[in-house]
Image 1: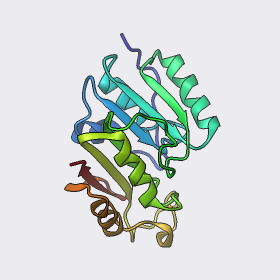
Image 2 (image 1 turned 180 degrees about the horizontal axis):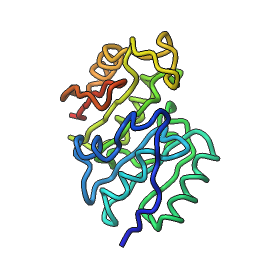
Image 3 (image 1 turned 135 degrees about the horizontal axis):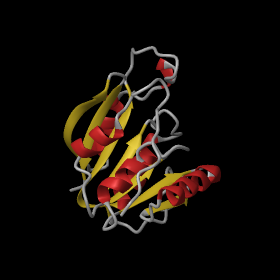
Length: 190
């Protein structure tokens, strides 16, 4: 049995509800999930690990080694053995060392603004996701000014992400609203 002692409150309260979002995009028992640019609290990593259960696993990818250490420590304290931390630059093809075509879902959440070339992160996600698997992009909407969000001029418009993904051969599945300040795009590898 997996203990669920660790909970997170995102900056600014419930900006994004990971449980609701993960269920809505189809994360379920036995799946393999990658969270690229997972961040120090693993806001989506831990709920995903609980949803996929002991038959599934989650790759928590971040470029910072201290993030991996924090994720590993929190996973151990919560008794979660299905989380695998990876220190890698997800903008470099193959850097995650996740075997090609093995993940059911790749999450790219709130990291398009930080990416030097968001197209490269999409390429690595495409490489890692299996045929018919999904890539979920959730990022900041333009126009919303809140103190905890990146500057509006730094945000990546959803149409830019849409064109990039389709240019890589991903099929656009749908757009959804994961929260008041974010857009969500679901793509499928064909």
